[in-house]
Amino acid sequence: MKKTSLHIHVALNDANIPQTIDWEADDAPGAGQTPCKAVMLALFDREHRETLKVDLWTHDMQVGEMDRFFYNTIRSMADTYYRATQNKNMANAMQQFAQFFGEQTEVIPKSE
Image (cartoon, rainbow, N blue to C red):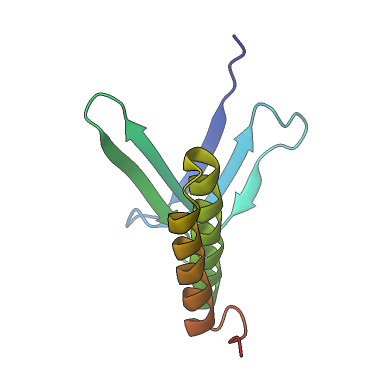
């Protein structure tokens, strides 16, 4: 069985606020640490059937960037949900919410 690792490096200031976030993956040789401004990690605990999560963003992430991050994440979650469950109705509802969210935050233009 092949194993791989994903590494997330967070530099904190004295108030424990993330100043930089970098990530790297063992499967991407030569890529090194790649900077990012935010990360959302959700893990489903098999034993307790609970979701554990870590949400981090850097001090310099702007609201517009956070809006775009959430818009893209919601869209991606809908795609992942459909691939995992084949539940087209719920996946479409999630995509509709993503569209609404994108329009309301002006990440995307309002549809006619």
